[in-house]
Image (cartoon, rainbow, N blue to C red; front, side, top):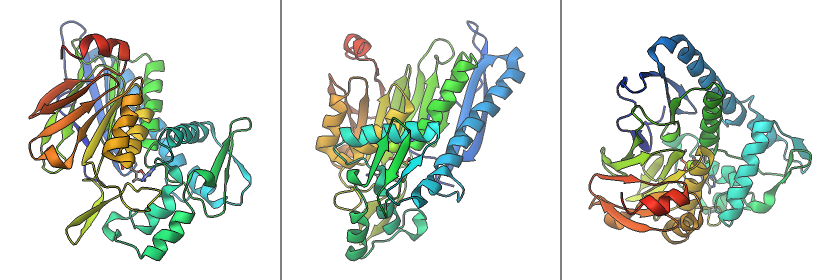
Length: 358
Ligand code: ADP
Ligand code: MG
């Protein structure tokens, strides 16, 4: 199992909250899934413990179902089946798979192709599917894999919900499926009329309602080089995801090679230590964090600035020692430092009113 990743939840999950106002308590459980830890907290009155238990079971089942469909590590997953049908013929998709591939195509387009789920041959060439075995491949292998990666290797047909893969094309949904899975879980909890909940899947976090006492949820941002938190994001709604170079990587001759790969060069991306995106939903936060990470400090942050409803906290190599990070939104570029606490409002209308005040 992977180290508990990227964003740690600082406060909200650690205690069972009981407040006079709403008498909601946290009903919480965790599991191992998608090679990481899933932590779900559902807030209901203490008298609704049985209902909360059903909520937790149902939310977990939803995430497990997405993993069963979208994992590369399960021989019977829908994704593995799709990857085996690379004969240039349309393959029918389940509804969730169609939704994820559509979103992936959108993020591929807005990133100019830097986010690309056809990255699998390159991730495989570098050995990142078993990170202990990751190593630098011969350049011939990188070149071969690169031929099989790119925007033109696959196409989606919305009319009949099919995807067509050119020979040799393989998908890897590692940059988006966790976000999608927790969006499904949040939708399910909302439909079950859960008043408040938090889902944390290896640092991909989405929330429903407000934290007890009508407060924002508090999400810690890990220091990308030290075992401590850099600061905290107060989250009123939506989702948070982090892409970083410190979670899955290997080192060779003092250089670090991480699991996020530039589809153009075929090499692991350098330039940012960590990039945390706040967005209205977890699919967007997950895919956008990976996309902006690949695009790098200039174009990646420009992509964030172009978003109507998203912002990012970025830790760059030059300033991480000082505990500094950069907050980037459509309207603001702000430097923050030393155990910061920041609120990023995914809704630009609110952001305009309140960003300066906090
Ligand atoms: P995490 O592994 O913590 O979920 P990310 O959400 O940033 O981090 O996703 C990284 C994963 O995305 C990689 O492990 C790989 O599966 C996949 N990936 C790597 N490079 C790309 C890329 N250029 N475009 C899309 N997905 C990628
Ligand atoms: Mg991601």
